[in-house]
Amino acid sequence: MRPLGLTLIASVLFTLPCAGQTTLPVPEETKMVVQLDVNAFAKTDLGTHAVSLIQEIASKEMSVEEAKFMSTIEQMVGFDPFTEIQTVSVLVSDYESPEEDFRMALQLKTTTGNLEGLMLSLPGYDFYEKDGVTIHTIKEEAVSAFVAFLNNVDGSKRILAAAGEKGLMQMLQRDQSPTKQIKRQVNSAVPEGAFAQVHIFQFPDEALEIDPDDNAVFKLVDNLSVVFGDAGSEITADVTLTAIDEKKAEQIEELVEGFKLVLRLHEQMEEPNGDDEADAEMSKMLDLLNGAKVERNGEKVTIHLKVPVNVVIDFIRDEAELPL
Image (cartoon, rainbow, N blue to C red; front, side, top):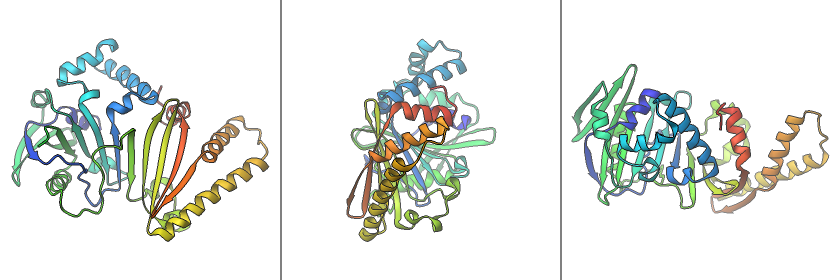
């Protein structure tokens, strides 16, 4: 994935006129969309830790003093990434091998800076015309990327990138046809006050090792979204399950409330098992779910959660083995 990341940093030479889109071009085979508001995330406690880690790792890779890293990056790309890049959206259509059909959309404010010069300096660069669009490609070892810059009429910029030509062309077709009825609609920006959101249109059954036939919720839910916000020492997570119909939404609400009741009973009756780490983990889960609020509106059921930032950091540190 590293060569592809370099490709996205040093992308495109040409801009295309298009409408100032409010929705993301999501092809029908997309299973999940992950979106990050870069500026909002950087201001959170979690984002501060993440940015510091990125600077530390990247400065060593680039042999640059950590204190001068951001100024070096700004000089290189021609803008401050944390103010110019608004939203990064990653589209996943294959859970087992996401890099096989990697797609990304970057929404910027007004400039693409020095990306043209950076791109031209990379080996393996080429471009060609297809259906009236200039497609820019970079091939590095076994990895390739196809990229196009879009110049919105409101002055903002959008970069669409994909690991394959087909993926990019599908995104361009969606982007150039905003009036076409599209089943999977995703806003191009995260909701106001949030720093990230995730949309799941098809559940990763194999990745989660869950059989939908044996899980009641999977039979009731059409899609799921999670919106993450910052509340100081806590991260808010609003999990919205969209049911097949209102009757199914009522059933989901009853299942969630019933699960919370079972947890409360378990907490009252269960004795500590002597495993301090396991008991601590169970206590955290019970605190999280006991504090959850559930509301239903039509076909949508939303579970409002609050998670301490230190719990999230500990989880990422343990699971991803990152020194946050």
